[in-house]
Amino acid sequence: MLDLISFLTQIPVRKEVKIEGVAARSYLFPFVALLIGLPVAVVAFLAFGYLGAANEIAALLTLLALYLVTGLIHLDGLADFFDGLLAPGSKGDKIRAMKDDKTGIAGLFATILVLLVSLFAIKTIGAGLTAAAFTFNLVSLYDFASIFIIAEISAKLGMNTCMVLGKGFADNEGLGALFIQSFSPWKYMSALLSALLIAVLFTASFQFLIVFTGIAVAFLVSYIAKKKVGVMSGDIMGASNELARCTTLLLWAILFT
Image: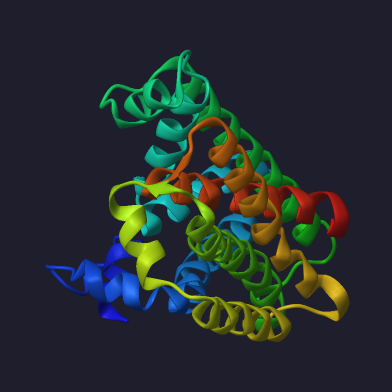
């Protein structure tokens, strides 16, 4: 778990990460998502609670807290994926564009769009939770925790789904290949059951079903990657993480606010 936390977050629990151990235990990603979602929920709870009508600032502080905890590694993967996806030429040309250290206009646009959608979704959700007679208690904190834990579990389930779908690719690239080789359908079932268990604990009624958003996004990302790029890489898994979280927050804002 220490390796997993160090790999997926900026929490300084271990100086050196054994990447082989992370790949072998990637089915535990939903539990790391729980650790990520909790501090972000606390920041959102305090920001929206104390700032009152300044929902935009509260949403911005929440988004900053999210990336302070998780880092920018997956956001970088999102940019690289879209640079490759929209690059002209063959699949080989697209792969080379993904590996390019420079961020192109497609990657920049995708990054800004995901951040903006996430920001406005968080603003809408937070404003909805504090619109009534808001009080600083455990019930209100639980409401915020539900949202950010489920969104993060959805994101990590998206990555796990890319790992199992990646086995159907003819070729795989770099770090992504290690995760795909270490993954299995049984490990995927373990990740899925863990995600559902945590989702049920942190949501009411049928809301836990929104955690499947990450799976749907991963299927779409994998299909596009296979058709346009031909490989499953760490960048594509990272892109799935960011898109799944963003989509989950957006759907929550639309359906439950």
